[in-house]
Length: 239
Image (cartoon, rainbow, N blue to C red; front, side, top):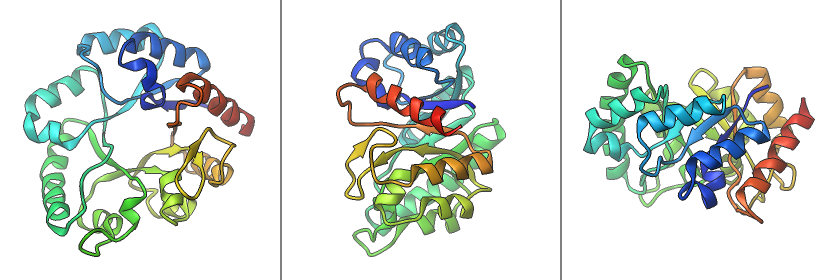
């Protein structure tokens, strides 16, 4: 199976050496790359490093503000690198006003990106499942008031007291990827297999749905590559 890595997992080396980090990740056996920033590299640089390591771009974590501030330039870059999945990693949705504006922006931008062959998706943390400052639980609002796709972060859904497997089933028609990750119910992350999240059930559901799995292991303990290695060994053991 193909497994992806969110490059934030190896952020201890990406800022200084993105090409080297990607090469090391590919050698671990990851075949899909989800970027979290490009650190000044050109679109051609990105295409070159992907090709050199025989890996595919699965998507990027890029803030919606980049589209709002420079739509044409941002679109051109993502088309040049061949990105088909523009994933918003987070956004301040702490008030009704901020949530309403975000939904307006999403509903305006999404059809434009879709016409260019790019899906707009949202990546959750735990707070989207808890009341915001105005008492609104954000995630159902995103589901019902927009057509945005979703990258379910199954660990943060678990921390938000959701059943990630049930959520995957509910959103399967709008689900582009999952983040498969582990940790405690209090929100302390661990590599796969070392925490309390239902990662085995999540794996099985993702496989059943045919949804690509992207690892994000965040704690850099002792370093990002070590965590990434533990994670892919866990995934391969599930096959």
